[in-house]
Length: 101
Image (spheres, rainbow, N blue to C red):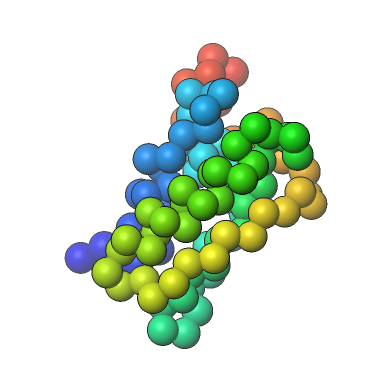
């Protein structure tokens, strides 16, 4: 049986940035996954740029998909821009997919 955090990471790996063909987890947009009492999930994330066209849509998509997990009582997505995202935050897999390795 997968742990709840592993299930959440799997969901995040199925959500893609619409402008970059890499999932948001490997892109390094997820800063923290916190599972609190009663399986309340709080995710801290950023975007590649503050003026990203999906700034309103992406956090809602994440929240809705995580709340579909039966173990999760609620989900909250906090969007932050400090520290600002940069390419060094990407996984090696993402860098390879984008031809950066």
